[in-house]
Image: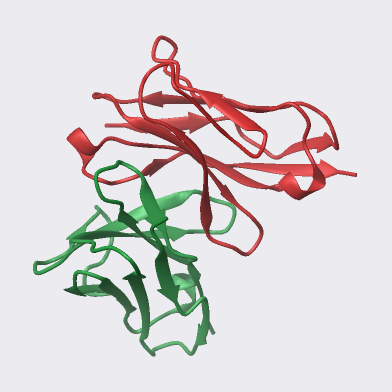
Length: 115
Length: 114
């Protein structure tokens, strides 16, 4: 089946630094990818829709300048958390829709800890 | 907008007990429905899905039936195992009205005791 690979799986960074998370569709092309955030013991909240060749669409309340999204190719989307703060610590997960189906395929997730 | 409501947890069961996790949805169109499972420290895995009314999704002993009349997609398993301990998310996706966005319920944490 379709595979979405997300890297890194875990990252610890210092406050004020930026962290880049990659999401790749390994055996299919994805013109659209989605980025979610999951707070401890809570559900996944959609942050933004990443569109290949155009700007990302952000959900209400998500800071565009804080969470930079770049969809550089049909198989790669990146999320950069800029000037990270401890409150940005969370589980981030990406997804990409499969061909001809409503099912989305999820990456393994990235646990970000900002110290 | 579309939404998913599922029963709050945590749910604690003994091994071999029956499991039901309730899920209801609100949608303007005709969504596909999913159950995802998240094991501790891991990402999401698709457990089962149903794409139209009266479809039954099943996998690993889990089942859920798409009930349009009650807008429900309850997850059931006849005999749970310790290895089933995880968080279960009910979700919907409607390609026609919502693109490929997936809308999740709050998640239900299941603990199975030996």
